[in-house]
Length: 424
Image 1 (cartoon, rainbow, N blue to C red):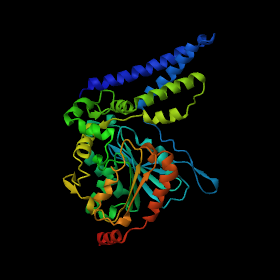
Image 2: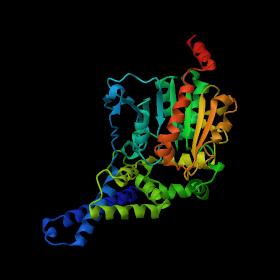
Image 3: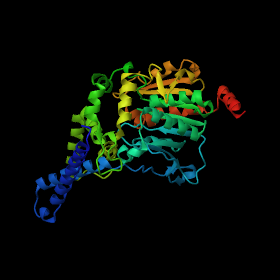
Image 4: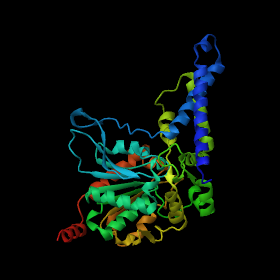
C-alpha cells in the first residue's frame, strides 16, 4: 500500500462523504421542503449536518481555545500561545497570561504523537494553568513536512525532548502522557549522563507503555501478533500531491482513525446515531458533549513511517526500554543513572490502552533512585482518557501531581553539587 494513489484515494473518499453530507443538508434545508410536515426531510437534514461535520474535522488541526484563567480578585487573564522553540517535526510552545505574576511551578507537558494533535491535552492544560506555568510539545502533521526535513523516529523524538528540557532549565517539572512516557524516561536518563544540570526536578509518567508485556491489552496483543513486514505493507503509505510532504512515507491519520474506531465500533455507531436523533429533534447544540468530544477525537494527523514502525519494533516487540537496552544516537541509555529526579507513576484501574503495571515498570528500572523519590498511584475506576483529562484527573490526580511537584521543587543536594562542578 506504499503508494500515493492509495493515500489520495482515502482523501477522495473522505471528501466524497463530506460532500454527501453537505449536499443532503443543503437539499433538506431548501425552503420549499418546509411547506408541509415531512419527517423524512428532518432526518435527512440531521444526517447531512452530522456527516458533513464528521468528515470535515478529520483534516483540520483544532485550535487550543483555552478560556481566560481566573486570577486574584476575580480578574480574568487571557491565554496567549507563544512558540519557544521551533523545529521541523514539533515546536515547544508556552501558554502565557500577560499581566499575571509568573507561577513558581513550571511544567513541561509532553504530548503523545499517536494520531491526535497535542490539543488532545487541552483540558489538561486548562486545569494546570491556574497553578502552573505550562509548556507543551506541539507535534506537527507529517503530511505537511517536506521530505527534505529528513527522518523522525523514536530516537529523534527523544532528542527533541532532551533539547526542550535543556531549553527550559533544571527547575522544570515534566508530565508525560501515554505514548511518550518511555521516551520521556529515556530523555531524562540521557541527560543524567550527558548533562546532569539540565535534568528536570520531577517526572510524572501517566499511563504509558514502559513495559507492554507487564499487562496485556488489545494494543499489545496486536503488536505481538503482526510482523514488521505486515505492518509496513498494510499501514504505510506515501503522502499525496496535495500536501507539502508529498512522497513522505507515513502512517496516515485516516487509517489510524479507522483503527481507533474499530476498537469500539458499536460505541461510536451508537454515539453518532444518538447525535443524529438529537439534531433531528432540535436538542443538539454546537458545543454539546458529542461535538466537544468528536471535534478532537476525529482530528487526526499523519505520523512518519519510521516513528510508527520504530515504536512498534523497539518499544512493544523488542521492549528496549523495559530491558534497559535503549540506544539513542549510538549512546546506550541507562535508566539507573537517574538518581536525583523524583518520579511519580499514574495509572488507571480500567485503562484498556496502557493497562496497570505497564507504566509502573519504570520504577523497577530506577535502581539507584532513592525510594523517597519514587511514588505511584492507581486511580480506581478510571480509563485511559480519564487519568489525564477527565473527572478523575481533575478531582483526584491533579491535586496529587501538584503536591508531588511542590514536594520536589527544590534541587536535590546531588543535583546542586553537579551544577557547581559544571560551573567550574
